[in-house]
Length: 124
Image (cartoon, rainbow, N blue to C red; front, side):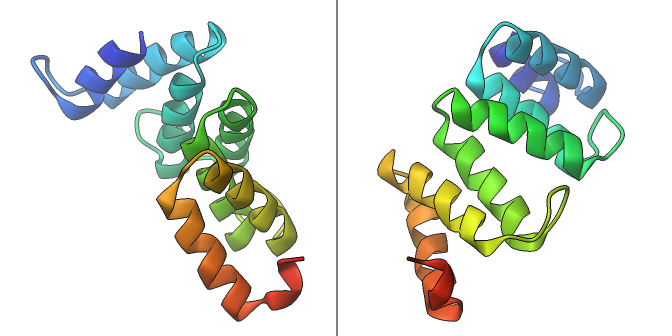
């Protein structure tokens, strides 16, 4: 479902449909696919094919992160960093970015560097 969702989201070989992509990502997520959960979270964060909801995006990123998806951890860290859909909490942002960085995410490593320079108290 997830790969087919990507095809609909990007319009690769099929007519682009964010609604269809979101539906397929939801099926993948419900089946335990952490990447599908992250992709559906992106759809909710951006309001593509679904009603925009940072709260729903955060819930889906958490599910993705708990499923071992470093991108989901990185995305959830951003929501905590910005206070979107969750309370602003730079310590939680640090924790999720650290989890992603330990999985090899260069983006999370960069985010940690920025965070620790601007808010060293959050990086303990």
